[in-house]
Amino acid sequence: MSALEVQIENMLNASLAVPMRVAVATAILEPSALTTAEQAKFGELARTARAKSWLMGRAALKGLLNKIGRDPDTAELAFPNKELSLSHSGELAIAVFSDSKFVSGVGVDVEFVRIVKPGTARFFLVEHEQTYIFALPDSERSIELLRLWTVKESLFKADINNNGRGLKNYTALDPKSLSGKASIGDNNSEFCYASVQLDSLVISGALNMVN
Image (cartoon, rainbow, N blue to C red; front, side, top):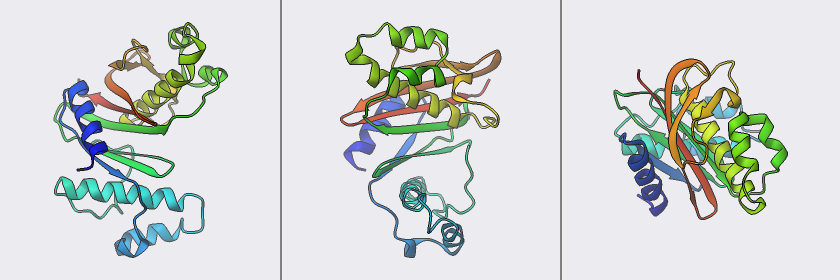
């Protein structure tokens, strides 16, 4: 395992208290390494802007599937997924896995550190989350906005019934916490999340817990 994989896996396992596995890819998978079924899917993307990130994602997914002893053919994988999640940012992709009986969905999101404008808060944060953000010093606001963006994205991905929902449907109960619980409005689904900044990366993982 790479040092980054170890760091992310240790953070998720310690904070979420559920066994998880992680694979990171920093290079694309060569198209020649795709299975016949994967090549058919790639053929639909080969001339689009998504082609490179898709190949990066296949590299992370195949690395993870090999690590857990599963068939590395990703052609039939669909997301959201009860056991797997995938995220890309720039020249990096992260895949995570958990088959815990206590989990009904898994999510991950990664972003390279960048400036996030305060005005974006209203698009993905609910009222008490915005209150937290705008009480922060200017020097801290952008990175916390980015962290909460990854939290919301990971929660969305962990919700296998996310069709028709947006990021504002997911509420971090204590937005200042690097790990904690989250909910969907009045829905009784229980989520937990953990987030961390590692050098130039902000990473969050989330689980939809079985009631």
